[in-house]
Length: 121
Image 1 (cartoon, helix red, strand yellow):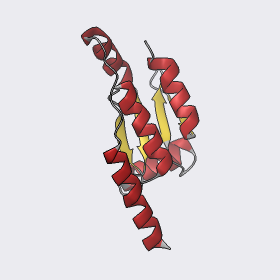
Image 2 (cartoon, one colour):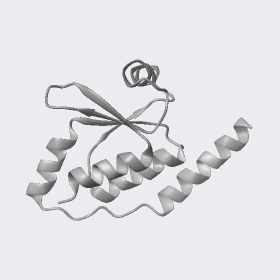
Image 3 (tube, one colour):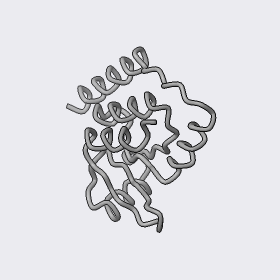
Image 4 (cartoon, helix red, strand yellow):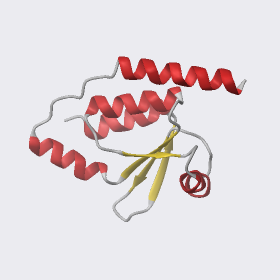
């Protein structure tokens, strides 16, 4: 089963590479503002997870610089996800509010909707 999962993951990554979405065009002011705003975000993800790929594609499409954290291979990030977020589930977007308090957003569709609402100019 793990061999099948590994193979499917590589196929997903290959097709993601072949059909990489284009980033939207932003003015220099918009790009700077979005980059500043995106510093409060971090995406906890697995490289070959299809739902994580879906979120990363939208991040690319929106032309955002959001930190990605590999919760599968990096024990520190996996531990943060479980201890602070409450679940070992990906994708998960960590959103720091104005006070630095984190909010954890799960589900790829919810993450995409949040990003579109926050960063569509």
